[in-house]
Image (tube, rainbow, N blue to C red):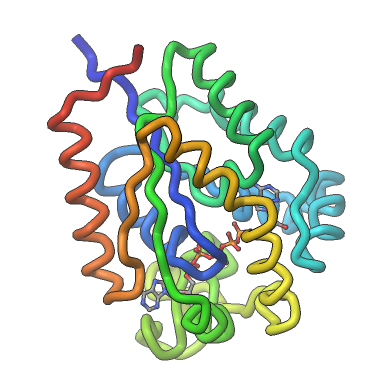
Length: 228
Ligand code: AP5
């Protein structure tokens, strides 16, 4: 019998390391990586209407409206790579999104198996985001000090140019952190009240965070993933 799919939500403030870890773990575990921020940036790069709409919100550090975001995730979940499950990175970010995700997964007889909150003190976040560099081709993430590329300005994996995200400017970062506390903190409580929230210390080396996350996920898998 095929194993039940595994759907994991990564929560945490901007700069907590959700994207860095989701990229690593999705490859290692054979799960899809669904990052709404990356999907919006891909639309922007492709000059779609959705990309233009999203940019209006992203450049101010505000959330893109729920209806648009949920519809985009609904489409993404139709892709075959989600059959074994997925790691959600940056979604859900509001209670409405969390409830919509439950409904979408229920249509496939699945559910959110675990939500993992990556905790990092606020003072560390701004430094992480101001030093972040992202690759143009595939969104690989680096940091000028904590995770530098081998060749400055070039992606280690595909050689493409590294750039600084427009919303990583300090004033936009401050607004993004504020929005996180106002609109995403209730999502933490939503999963805590269901008994599926685990917290991981994100203020340690990247490899150590990966190990901590793998330990949580291994325990989840050993406990059996019950998709009922
Ligand atoms: P999004 O792209 O999702 O950004 P975010 O959630 O703000 O998260 P970040 O990508 O900034 O941080 P991260 O936690 O992934 O950290 P990373 O691994 O890169 O969203 C952008 C915008 O899109 C939103 O503001 C909104 O407008 C819109 N949007 C997206 N989703 C939406 C939704 N669901 N609803 C509505 N709107 C939505 O790491 C950061 C840096 O730190 C990197 O340089 C990395 O190398 C470094 N680093 C990582 N881990 C460590 C470590 N352990 N030690 C040292 N450095 C580290």
